[in-house]
Length: 222
Image 1 (cartoon, rainbow, N blue to C red):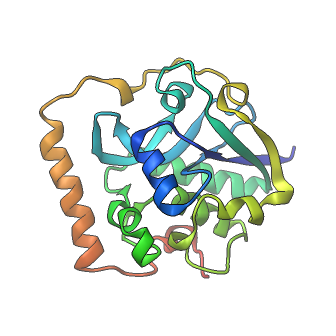
Image 2 (cartoon, helix red, strand yellow):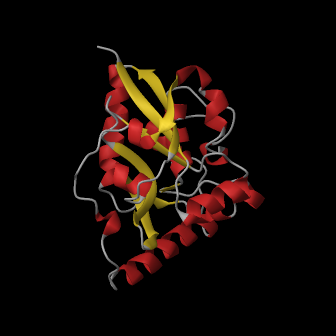
């Protein structure tokens, strides 16, 4: 049976999402990946909780996260990418591993400085589009530049033939009522976690920045 993965570009309604679209002159600001045909299990590099933007990593997304539990439209483009069984299992295994490994964090400084630096690689850190770009590079796409240099809108042209849906997220995914800590109330213990997360990204961003550190887990050579 043919396997597929799904890449989702979205125009999220958060203040940070709106800021990114404005500064980067992009239609879409967020990129995710789904490994099931009904798009009920979606993954992305993002903040872990809505009120703790500095605590972040690979998270499981849901319809509630996209809409912030509001009755609003969230425009998305979904790409359906055919993969081999071996490629699917490799991607699935890596996503599961990273989901529970706290060493992987959001590539904060690369994103914030993107208008000036055009993005840079940080060990064990990814932005949402950077992680999706690495997966696509493993599949043989987006080989013209490093994954950190891509922006969400770049995928529209690169993956044009794989466009599957262009709609409201509420029409594209099945509601999955799993426990989602994204909406948990603020807790003081998130402050030291936030500081530790920023320090770790700062250390890898400005003290040591091996260019191949993230590529190696998929054996990507671009």
